[in-house]
Length: 58
Image (cartoon, rainbow, N blue to C red; front, top):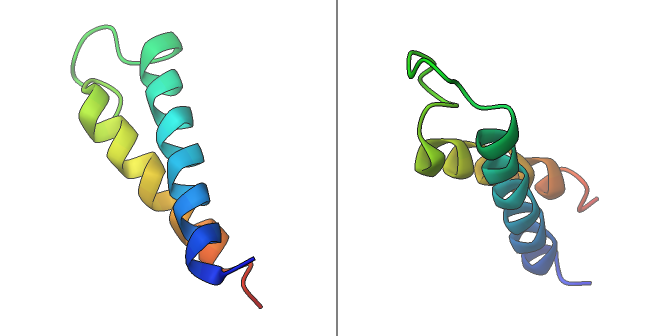
């Protein structure tokens, strides 16, 4: 599999996990900077997923 495809799949999986984290765990009071906003949570987890998969290219 091409390395870029792995990174994109990792980012997509991370984005899904980030949204699910916001939806089911999230921050009820709105004071958590990552989990209070669905866009922020999705973006941060997408970056984490992409970075994790980029390390598996070797």
